[in-house]
Length: 134
Image (tube, rainbow, N blue to C red):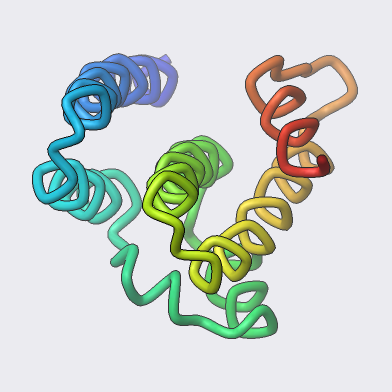
């Protein structure tokens, strides 16, 4: 029960952080947007987003998808943060970083979807995958 309470609190806190990130995005305040994403990634996953972005696809699989202590909920949080960063690259016409990060986002969302139990369905993951596959 304690574990479930911790996860619920963490997801509620992440929702607040995402609201801040999306607010900066709406205001086109890209410096604060990036700083908030960096801080959130480190806070919720203990990983650095810049390091993740610079990983090769093979290293991304080892270091993120098969991370020994990264929980599925943390991977969902990371996927959402990477997805927002992906949108940042799209809006700022950074094609190289966009393509690289899109591959990682797609792999992460597919990993999340494939690791759900039979009784789980995450609408957010489903729609993000549909967007990424276009």
